Image (cartoon, rainbow, N blue to C red; front, side, top):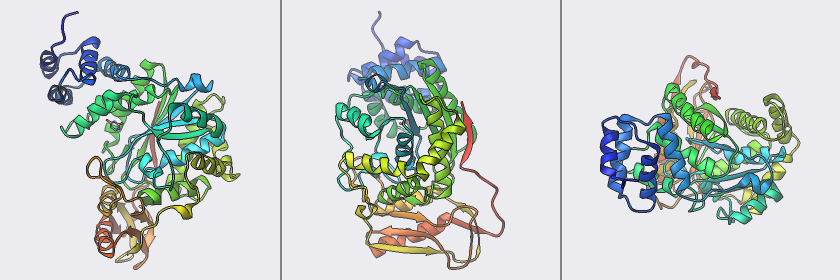
Length: 434
Ligand code: URA
């Protein structure tokens, strides 16, 4: 084989040419081995930004990313069909923390590898670390053993699972090349496939607080991920869900854990509960239980109603060293109500503004390695469509100091638009692509 010349491949992609599978693999694996420098991969990503990758190239990229590290054979280890879920992320997204116990209570094992977040609030791992004692770094053997015993484990992604994605994501983050459909699709799907999933429920967020601002763009990303699943022999269902307003009420790590637990026991906010139950039903329908969507939904609802989901939640948190009692969660010293300045209907509740208020309170990271304050955040008490009287509580700000609370309260208030007419009906589940 002729030696790989990265500059030529970059030039050809820049000129809109298609690259062969082995050329893409050479670039990615060479980069992962440290043989190709950051600046060449950055230029390649920018060429992809303008010229795109076709479905075959995107699959070659995904496959190379998977081959950059080890893969987990979770299905073989458990002797079960493995169903995973993934969300593209948004403000107040604690879905996995509620879905995991419900699905496990229905008899389908769940083993998830999750990430940390840069941005408004932490990722799933950061949220879980708000629970005193919770350990996200289990060995692979302990991970598998816990899934067998408890039915559920959520851990950090191991260093050797798709290492090329870690490197490439870090590079994309600082070279304005994150929001590119084939790169997002291959990044997400490589991790799900390498993690051993046989079937995957994807939740692509749409709106102000998401990567994908429009339903059309979200559909394009969903189709790209579905195609990667097809080529890899995985069953994939993609939900397109609303991220124009925060998901549920809580935004902030400990606050979101409390809300996820409330949802597992049937006391969650309506939009979040609906999304959780729908995702559970779809996971059950893709599992080896042999049930359809309707029966999956019925079983998920039953697991919430009879307390078995809460029981799994508590056993799971204890198994990973945490205290499942909500009273053990860290609480912010200052809680300030944000009140409606006039009567009206909430016509808009900007997700990004609420997310930024939580970030400024300390709930998220501005830069890699920043410390997170698990206790702080925002709880939205009124959501889009709610009718409020003057002085009603729109939201609570949970802060470290009075000054921080005052600043965040102004930001939170600016996220609410009050009007006189009810807004257009806008369900949480916007579409399903399968
Ligand atoms: N999430 C990922 O895991 N990768 C991306 O590229 C974007 C979102």
